Image (tube, rainbow, N blue to C red; front, side, top):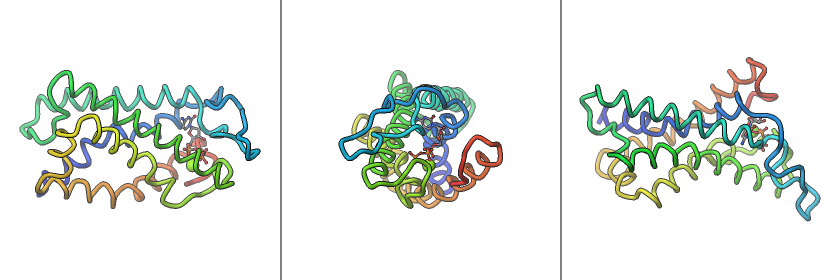
Length: 185
Ligand code: CTP
Ligand code: MG
C-alpha cells in the first residue's frame, strides 16, 4: 500500500514540475500572439508564453528522464515509466499534457471573464493534472491502468488528487516569494 502511494507521487512528478518550470523559464511572446476572441477578451492571455510552454515541457521531460535513470537502481518495478520507447513517450506526455491542460484552463477562465492571474478554484489546481492524466490514459492505457487504477494502485491516484491542491498552494507561495509569480495562488 505504501508503494502504491509512493509510485503515484513519483510517476506524476514530471507533470507537477512542468508548471513551476514554466514559471521559472516563461516570459516573452504570448502563445495567443496578443489576439482577442470575439468576446473581446484574450484567447489565453499574457500568462501563457511560448518560452513557458517549451521551457516547462523540457524541464518536466528532463526531470522524468532523470527519474527513469534513477529507477535502474531501485528495487521497485512499480516505479517504472515503462520500457523503451514507451517510457520516453510517457515522460513526454506528462509535462506536455500538464501545460496543455494549463492552457485549456486559461482559455476557460478568459471565456468566463476571469482575468489573467485571478483565481479560479478547482480549475487552477486541477486543469494540468486532469489533462496530463487524460493524455497518458488515452495514449498509454495499459501503463496508466497498471500504475493508477489496478488494485492498490488506485491509492496512488487518490493520493495525488488529495495532495495536488496542497502542493499547488505551496509551490505558488514559493514562486511568489521568489518574485516569479505576481500572486501567491
Ligand atoms: N507561464 C508561461 N507560459 C506558460 C505557463 C505559465 O510563461 N505556458 C508563466 C507565466 O509567467 C505565468 C506564470 O507562469 O504568469 C504562472 O502561471 P499560471 O498561474 O498558470 O498563469 P497566470 O498568470 O495565473 O494566468 P492564468 O489566469 O491564465 O492562469
Ligand atoms: Mg494562475
